[in-house]
Length: 209
Image 1 (cartoon, rainbow, N blue to C red):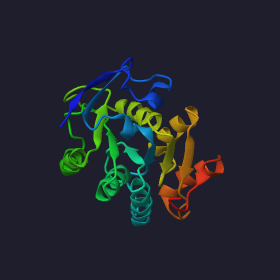
Image 2: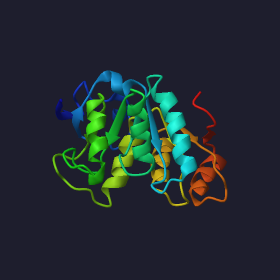
Image 3: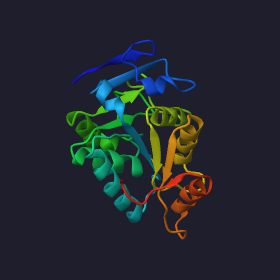
Image 4: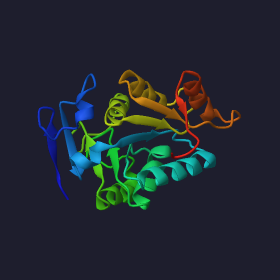
């Protein structure tokens, strides 16, 4: 398994990420750091407290999208992030886990099996932080800008009114990237954020196409 770091002036540095404001000066990585894995990327984010509906929709959409050669980018947290990563690797697709900590630290620790599976299936783990450096409150939004910055578009599956997923959505809008949102039942708290995104112009997603 390959590991190392790539600085912003390196020709291997992801072109799309270099276009954003406040690009990371360097990226630390484990796994498949290649031009191909960065060529077509979709960020998939959503609530940590996802519902069964959200999980089902995420599995269906990501399975179809990843099987068509689109790399799925997410933030490795429990809930929607982990569901998106799993759905991608389960169909033999590529996925990039952007960590809120150093690449050597598995956070959350109980997702060690998923971490290893991403690497085994030719995926990638990256962070702007080295080694075993732990996460902090401020590292999550910084991580989110990388998730959005690597991707041509961002898909929000579920989000509460003040969900961290909306930070990623706002970065996508700031970077002039396409923004998608999945509609959900208005009786659910985790549909409020996505409904607001749709009201503000996000494209409604009803199928993988």
